[in-house]
Length: 398
Image (cartoon, rainbow, N blue to C red):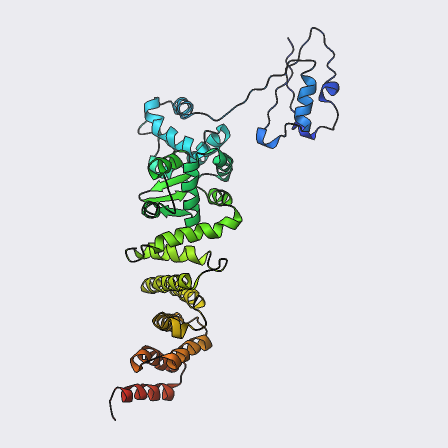
């Protein structure tokens, strides 16, 4: 019996001639066994390789063996054999490894190699066995290759799970469970089956859970889910999330107010909004800006406030006086505090307030800020005169 080992490159690199004829197979009592492998997602059914396999099958036996994903049980048996430990001890590790690799044998090998190299999975001389920390391994992000595998499975998921993933992806790379439950209280907007879908999303490896927060296991997964939402529908999807949250903004915590403002900012410039909607969204931006100011996030505060100002109509001082006054005061204030703002824009906001204010009391905040602004620019005489003018209007004499 003669054993021959043939090492060759991928069949696709062979010249476009028949593999069978090149092998010179003409029949007889002898035999030759050829083994080849390929990734079915990289080979077309009517491509060169498959056409050659069809040609070969006319004169010899060709057997296709599909190697699918390893089950969680098979992964556990493999780890048990590799680590020389009973399956009851490797069960928790197998669950994590299977979730991080989707049961792909090649990814399992690379994942194990990685955690051994980083000494997360290591042999303990003292315990005379392999040891690891499940929590530490669970924190490891999945690889890009696994993310691509999961992305291919998206369209095969139950519609209820896809809907939950779409909402999560529209919110961001991570979402709190309380946010999803809050959105689910609006039956006209969403009907999310959270009790079933969230655990399934974690089990399938799309989401990772850390306390009350669910996060996509890879950025490319979030992008793939976003791609499931048609481009022309995304602006309406963001508006639906933002509007659903705005309906309860009197009871929302700061994080949800900021989330609602972010969602509206993603769609406000692409949609035709009614005057009532513009006023409501401007008020939301003002509220988000105030919360950002309290957290000393001045750049974010400026973004929200300017977004609110941009939503005001031309006659806003007449139609929405109180909202205009607050937005203009906050705009000037955040620019002054931040220090990176446009001085001309700050001055323009203050002058607009002083010009349109209906009462002296409504000018006080702007006048005080104007004095501080003048002082910061080195115009001390003007700042002092402005302060004296304010005191004079308050009835103080010198």
